[in-house]
Amino acid sequence: MKKVALVPDSFKGTMSAALVCDIMAKAVTDNFPHCQALSIPVADGGEGTVEAFVKACQGEIVHCRVYDPYFNETDSFLGLIDNGKTAVIEMAAAAGIGFRREFHNIEDTTTYGVGQLIEQALDLGAEKIIVGLGGSLTNDAACGLCAALGGKFYDSSGQAFIPVSGTLGQIHRIDLSSLDKRLSKVKLIAMCDITNPLYGENGAAYVFSPQKGATPSQVEKLDQGLRHLAQVAKDLPNSQPFFAGAGAAGGMGYGLRSFLNAQIQQGIDTVLDAVDFENKVRDCDLIFTGEGKIDSQSLQGKAIIGIAKRCKALGKFLVAVVGAIGEDLTGEVYERGVGAVFCSNRASLPFEKAKLRCEKDLYDTMNEILKVIKTVKR
Image 1 (spheres, rainbow, N blue to C red):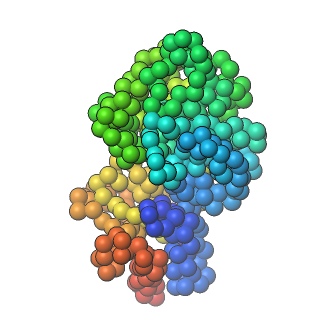
Image 2: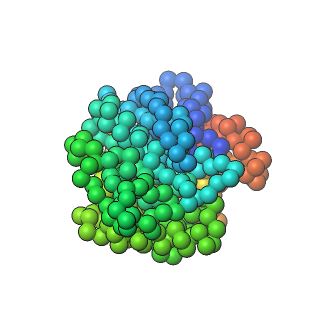
Image 3: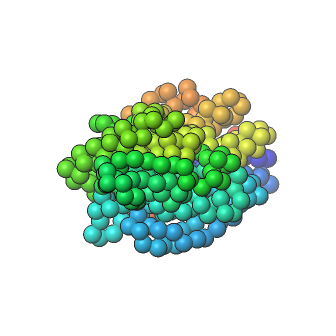
């Protein structure tokens, strides 16, 4: 083999996409010393998105200070690619689940810091801003984000305030006339891999807020707040609470589109477009991908299937190396373009034990696959 592409997602809870690329690349070069291993780490919009873009596109990380979900100052970051023309933000870097503190109350949380990251991207001259929606600790439908960028929210007495996850029901009027004027000159893209609406039994509050610490009574209150917001904002040009992804990241999908006219895209397509995937892999002999688990949910547009679709169109054989294979996985995965699936959990251990040896197991699995290829090619 002369050239292979490595296009993995992260193995959640164990290895970043960049680390998976490094391990795969070592196995390739150990077996085929003269083979070029092209690393294209991908992400779904959550933690690791900026790192994946920066590594795949030879960009840079910019560090800054913003507010965390509780309005405390914290260190954060964004990525710059395409010679600084495109900024990449993962909302988890300012409002993610990793900020959860001991005495957490989801009703107090805000996405204000994510708005500050967008403002930083504007200050750096970005012409395009990609925001990854994933791993949020919030349920404020991007109201805090909007406020950080100049949007105004008023209560029934006419007082301006910054809504948080638990106070959306107090919003009486929204004024976007003071939004940062630079926003109208940039292309804003939200990476989103879920299809949930803003509210209702399949919406942001009922499906995701219990994972963020919401009690049953809070879930109902948060859902009512999202319903109220959608009613107050119903006359905004892009306000539609039921589009696929409106409920992403505590309703941030809805807020970004309604307040800032963002374009909602599947995460994997956003990454593959940004790295010019088709042209980079056109002359590859083989393509490897991977993620923590492949199952029936993967068929709904997750990374592996998005990559498989493009590989199939190019006539490229795609090998998926994953941490686990779901019992519900069907043969449809092969119809979608995956050529073969291998599990890297070599001893069939439970996750807590498997994660302790996951790096070696991934290398050994890749090594076995490549030894077979090397033998066949002799």
